[in-house]
Amino acid sequence: MPDYDLTQLETYIRYAEYLDTDNPTKSFTEEEISNLWKLDIYKTKSVLRKLRKSGFVRRTRAGKYKLTLAGAVLVKLYKRVKK
Image 1 (cartoon, rainbow, N blue to C red):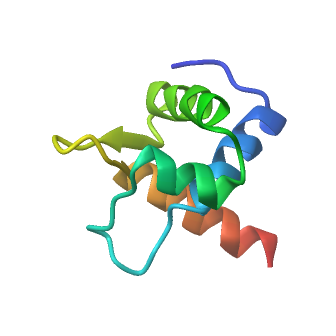
Image 2 (cartoon, rainbow, N blue to C red):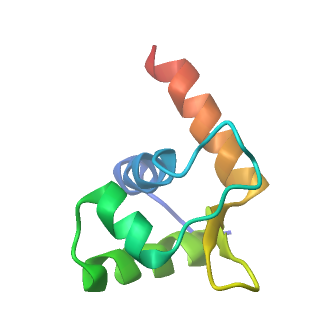
Image 3 (tube, one colour):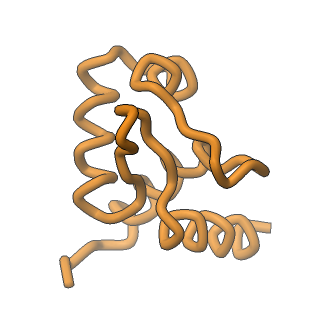
């Protein structure tokens, strides 16, 4: 299991939080995510690579990105603790 510090984990969760929707089948293109995060496309791709490597998001066959079940659970837990 990768060794994360809490600030890095929290950063990943905060990015993943934008992809958490009421519709579990919702997926996003890189451009849509770039607009959500207000980042340029190169930085977006870099963050997406890190989130994929960490298991927060996955890439669909159509080339879009969506939260994994583990990513969705961590986001929901984070939101509850944050309240």
